[in-house]
Image (cartoon, rainbow over all chains, first blue to last red; front, side, top):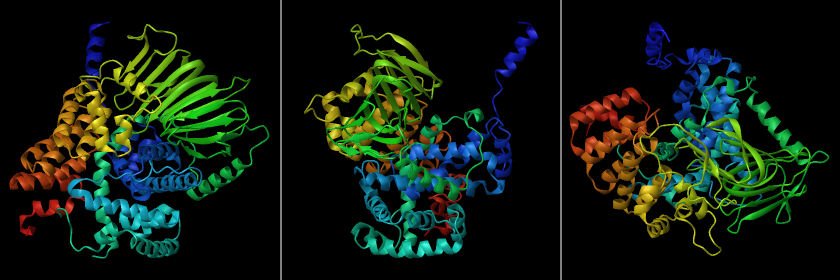
Length: 212
Length: 411
C-alpha cells in the first residue's frame, strides 16, 4: 500500500456519518432516496411517539416491542407511497393506530379460544405511585370492554390528548364519525368506570398528586 | 378539571412505565436500517388493508383442498388461532403427522395452514416440534425476529420476548434460521444448538450438550458471532445452560425465579433466586436476567438487595442500556425509599448521560428535575429545567419545569 493511500485510509477511518438534520419533508425525501442514516433518523424521531400511541390504545401489553417494530417495518416498506411529506407524523401515527387496532382484534379472537391474561395489561403497582398505577390498570380494564373502534378513538382523544381532527385523520374516518364514536365511548367508559372503585376515586379527586 | 381530563395524568404515569422499560432501544436493536431489507410497495389504504385482512381471514377459514388441519385436545384449531398453554402444556396434532408440544406458560399463533405445512408464530415460551418428513414439506416458525424454515425434523425452540433471548436445540434433521446477527441465514443440524441474546447482541452456535456428545462441560463452539458493546460480557454460555435446565423442571418441581418474576410473584421470585445463591447469579447471570431480578427485589420492597443487583449490572455491563436502566432504578430507590435526593440526582444524571437514542432520556431528565428541586439545588434545578423545556417542550414534566425555570411562578 502506498503512503498516500495509507494516509487516505487513516483519514477515512475517522469519518463518521453525520446525523441527519432536516425537517419532515427533507426526511421523507432522504428516505425515498435511501440516504444513509435516514431510516434511523425516522426511528429516533418518531419511536417515542409511536410507542406512546400504541400504549395508549393497547395498554401496557407485552407485545409492545413487537408492535413498535411492526409499525416501522410497515413505514420503511411503504415510504415511497407517502403523498404529503409534511404529514409524516400523521402518516406514521395512522400506521401505529392500524397496528394497535389489529392487536386488539387479535386479543379479542384469542379470548374466544383459550384465555390467558399474561400478555395483557401488566402494570407494576408499587410504593408511592401505587394509587395512580392502580387507576391506570383499572382504566385499561374498563377500556378492554369498549368496542375496538370506540376504544381507539377514546384512547387517542382522552389519554393521548389528540385533537378531534387529528383523531379523525389517523383513524381514516370523518370528523362526524369520530364525534359519534367518542360520544358513545365516553358514555360507556363513565358507566363502566363506576364499577372500578380505584379508578372512580382517582378520577373524582381534585388536584394533582405528584409534582406539577 | 373534568374527570376525563384527569386521564391525561394517567397517561403521564404510563409514560414513566414505558420509558423505564427500554423498549425503544431494544426494538431499535432488532430493526434493520438497511433500505434493501424492505420491499418497496405502495401502502394500501388502511381501510382497504383492513378489508383485505378480513377477507383473508374469511378465506382462511375455508381451507383449500389438501391443506393440513390441526387439533389441540380434540378441538379444531383454525388459522389465526392463538394458543396459550395451560400449566401442564398442550399438544397440537396436525393431519400430516406432525406434532407440537407447547410448554407451560407459552403462547403460539397458527398463522397459516396449507398443503405444504404450516406457518406458526411462537410469541413466547418454549415449543417442542416434530415435523413429519414428506416431499415438499414447508414449515415456517416465526420466533421473535427469527425465522426458522423446516422440511422435516425434530427440535425444541424457545423465545423470551421480555429478555429477547432465543434458543433452538436440534434433535433430528436440519433447519435454516435467519434473523438478527445471521441475516443471510444459517443451517443447523442434529446435535447443534443456537442461543442468541439480542439485548447483549450475542449469538452462539454450539454442539448440543444433550445430544450424543457427552464431552460437553465445554461444548465445542462451531460459530460465535458477537457485536462488541460492553467491556465485559457474561461468562461463556453458563446463563443459557442454566436457563435451559430451569425450563425443564422435573415433575412437581417449583417454578424458576424468572417464571415467578414474570408472573408478578416478586417475593417468591426473590426467595427462589436466593436459594440458588444471589452471589452466584450476580456473577453469572446475563444483564436482562439481573434487571429482572433487581426489579423483582425492588417491587418486593427489598431495596438493599435491589441496589446490590443494579450496582452489579453497572459494574459488569458498563455502557449498555441495562447499565443506564440500572442507574435509573438506583435513582428511584434513592429518591423514593431513601429520600436521598442529592444521590438520586447523581443517578438520574448518570442515566441521562448513558441513555442512548432517547430511551429513558425524558424520564430520567424529569426525575432529575424533581431530585434537584427536592435537594434544594435551586440553581441546578432551574438550569436543568431550561434544558428540559428545550428538549421536551410538551413532556410530562414540562409544567413543573416551567415553574422551576421561572421562580416567580412558584408558589
